[in-house]
Image (cartoon, rainbow, N blue to C red; front, side, top):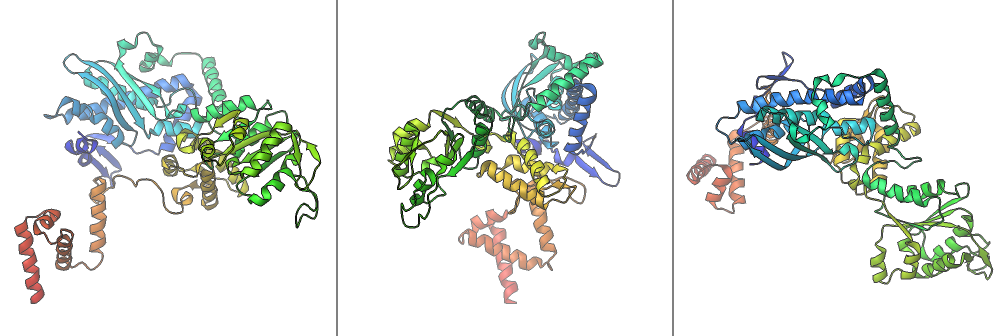
Length: 559
């Protein structure tokens, strides 16, 4: 049974009421509250600072546990003659319905007669993980504590025995999505984790709380590597670990990755953290220089070497002597330049164009490309011997769409950067805008994110939040809210909302019912290519009813 059918079968939408006059929201007989996710995130932070991480975690888990129990009572009330498995699955749908997380049950072993339970669930769009990332960045511990408590409380209420869920992967830890595993409490053994579900977990000393807060702050500080490189996702960490090991050595590094992933930033980091940091860093985009000028740019030119060469000048290799030369888009080098580059790498010597004097150069070479060099070799566009020279130490930088947990960190760093440039102070990025950033596919990678954030900082009002319209010029690439409140205070679904907006638009235009009905009948017949049976099916009426209405329309026209 699909999610939509579950929601519709148990008529949850019709049970949600907004009483604006009384200032109340009700889901069946349970009063509900709407809070800003940002405000709840601020509360979490206060709990961490005042209680310490362990106590705050226990409190949030137990709060979620109570919420899960209440929703289980609602699901049982809606039980009717429904299948127990289907009714139990209302819990994940309620969780999504309340805007907390989207759940996908990946494994469940439920035996209602014996009361046995085992299950695993994937979570997407967890408000708690998103909030934790924005406040603290990536850490080592999962962050969806109220959601874990909810799942545990919901299952416990259904099975009349303590069922405990535990988060084994979390977006806040840099994982692709959140994942939980649930089973009866006794099957967890003597795991200290069970203590979070007991109210007496609030014992301890103030000094322990201070130590916990200190450890948390150290963890948060460690989530941002030194320099301008920002990220803590597994893909970023793998790339950063490789460049970190290579920085202090003279090894030639080949940075691989799509356009815009930040290859030059990684190259600069290698230079800044190596033994040549006090010497020049020279960057060359090989694709941006015309082929007939590339050799003179790289290796220099002697006066009179060709028409227009009125003075001798050093090339980029000489200018980078003692330091680092970064060759970006090295896969676009013409074959003639590849031959000379290989010779320089083998001998450490350059010859200026039109000169017979050899000059020694001491250069640390870092290259980068978004071209598949193996394919270029097969196509005869790149020399295999040069490839093996450059690819001594390859480092793959993943695209931004594969390191989504880095987006809040990068966005915060970029906002801070552009606040200084535009002399503004902002509150940050709104929840909807951050959701749009997290859901976007990022064809331009980090460079595109940088451009969007700069635009957002420029357009956002000073002291305000960066909203979606400040970021995306052509409209937000996210789905609109799934439900709206009608005039009776009832929340509908997306399809109903769309139809209601259409009806409202029609009624505002001097509505003529007969004319609109005739036009609708005509369009249906045209779409069905004159087949009245198919046209009637499109309109949701019988063929006889359609034929009668068409005749009536024709008579009215003749009159």
